[in-house]
Length: 483
Image (cartoon, rainbow, N blue to C red):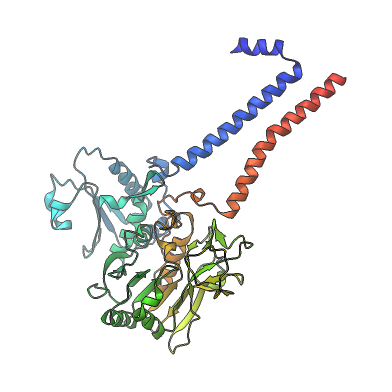
């Protein structure tokens, strides 16, 4: 290599040699940057088992551990000599929790040599797999079970399956449930073609990290209690009369309802649900909402993917570091005035928004019947005991948007906002967001307007840099020859 360089120096003119050297150096730098960016996007979510990542507890977890007033004992279940990689992750997390709080005790149970201890916790030990963890309060009156699969959250992004270790979030949520005097639950209502718990797995994980128990069930059989939250997510079929009455009783007794629809919800085919909404002075408007393309913060990648700005004056959240993404949203009806019910508007569009009645047409094309002006996107209704949170986009909480297959939840602050609102509804002490031991998916997976601008600037910079260097070298070469 040295001989090649020496020969090149002898045969090439002085200026040309340095021009070639500059170009090669610049090309190598550009190639290195492109490879680094590609590696970051491709391997951002690959399972990270490094101790520095697992052992670093979030501020929320540290605050909750510091506030513990009674001891809890955590029992991971592993046979002696187990080589499961999950064991290393759990052991590291539990060690850091134990060191952070004297109220946390950890005792490993070997199901082979200690079946009696395991039976005291689980009852039936036949279905207890390695990696299961039990969290028990000091009195032994509450035992929370976490299965091994609860610690690993997997998602398919394009052709790759990414696995995230979310042990810290699950453990701190279980500790809160074990120590709380009352544990509120969240119920995904089923039976009407709604978005299921499985379709909203990130939302489920968020609520579990907050200390909520998460269940699914039909309205007639779910064992919801006052203070629980029912989630009715994008129903495609109507409630029965008895189900509507059951939901009214649930709300009157102090229950809470998260009701989310969207542009594709067949609102006209849901008379029972419409009647229920009218009782509380709320409702939805048919169609989908788009924003003027000149409002750069109004949509993400597509005009029907709204990204409304959250103002701090709603009293529920002072600051939000990221962006909200509401795909294919409809609009809320103007809240009606009812005795004993107060309405708090949470999200609105700009004055440039348009409500298209035709949800199958071009999102940018105006059509007869379109309505322009500011649209309501989210509102909180406080009842005498319970409350109703109304959202104009059910897709904002799904793992995948069916029209694109993209996860907007992972590239937004939707979960943080919902956690804040659920805390407000249930009167909790403040819930965790998924920075508690869970890596967020990269924002690059959804192209924001600002990111597109940044990328264009980067491309121009990378293209202009070698051209500028080449021009500079040519100027220097010409000047040297003149001299």
